[in-house]
Image (cartoon, rainbow, N blue to C red):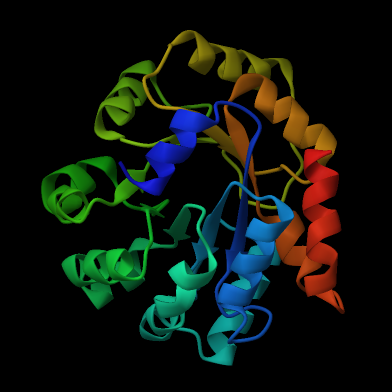
Length: 256
């Protein structure tokens, strides 16, 4: 049982995950930020590896990715930085990014490197499900890595069932089909979508992402899922002066 499974076995609701981009705002702060987030009360983390064409991301995360690339971040350096991860961070950690850098790095090599530094799962928004299943699932499974699939309001029930079958930790529910950085919009159709997912009684926990930025949106998302993910709002904090000192109050404000 990996750290993600242990987390979901012991905590069923109000889980908070934080996303941030490796190498942003400074090149060598990745593990420092991860450690500070755990101490502040985050339940698990998503560390993004930057890519020059982040199609699912809004301006805030696009900017963080470009800054990280300009700082010199790449997968080789990220894995080098993460060698110290498990001496300082005990909560589950996922890597999140796009398929192109992973394929260039080598999928099997990527999975082995991720496990070697203590990563528990991978989120790849643009990796097609059939491609994962046919070409890459053995590399994830052989290394004990969870592959996290995304569901949108337009995803069919058959596809959601298939995703639930292939998943072994949690399913990432997008609050909309738009890019990151918007605000959580609880229209009738979105509430219907959340209720539809809840009524399916999936075997895997669900976590809501995109548009979660404060205590109100976090609480609302947790009414429909086991927890939620905060990304752009935290990345904005990292652009401020003395951001490390502000992390505890940021996390405390969301979980209040």
